[in-house]
Image 1 (tube, rainbow, N blue to C red):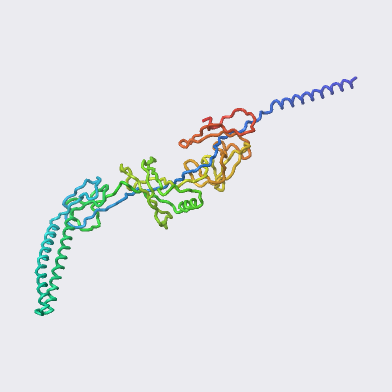
Image 2 (cartoon, rainbow, N blue to C red):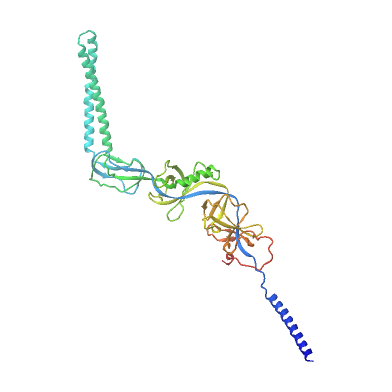
Length: 413
């Protein structure tokens, strides 16, 4: 009897254990978490396109013409006839030097010429008489030679007197100091009453032509070699013989007038490894002044069959190589090195290593890893603000099961 009770109790305990195990298994199955939704990233579709290439370089404004005004004769400054800082035209009278001594020299030269001319007729008549007498052997050959020499001397005196008269007239004209070029005149270094000398070291004033005006731009020899290499390899197509140049002022405002590239220096500075490129700009409002710092944007040409990769999508590895993440057709993330050549606005220019239609991750790249399956939402980037905007169509990757809605960082913003 006791044995039967023991067996019954053992069966009950075993049945309870089995029931507890089944309940435990069912509880674990019920507590299993739901499948995680696929990560969402924002992608931009890359398109092969011609890209206008420009170089933004520092430069300084310089007057197109500069003339330092110096006196060509000496004397006292009688008057100054211009307003400092004003615009003058070529030939305008700037200064008057006391002309009294130069007028007297002119009068003396006139008299000397008259005296020289008066001696010529008698010398000529004497030569004519001696010509007949020498044929008759009525005079000696020496007398005839002396008469001809006297005539030549008289004619030479006339020529000398005429040259002296011309010099006197020039010196008198130099007492009126005129503007050699048109432009804006600086302050006067001397005032009326000051004594000046011919061709003195100190200029009376300086005139600068401001319209048109030049901009001297500094370019490195390294960039020059890269530019020529790109042209030779066909990666860059020149924009034409007339290279357009734009200006950005020191305030960041773009100058309204476009300029033209004039020339480039034929030698490289051995100290800095740079050379100067000069552009000419219209300056009707005199907004540009010599010495101003500007940024010149030179249109170098067009890079055919190129891609623009958003800079926000590119990172650097430990070797300094440019890296980017792409979303393949099967929805998996790929990471690879891209060969960037230069920046164009907020993008990197790439002419190899990517294909037309590839999708590059521009947001959420730090949250995914290579090989991971993701959902890509196609966006565009506003070049002015840098904001991401949904594209006309949403590029979701294929073969993805329905998932709980997820909000991207862009949508949150």
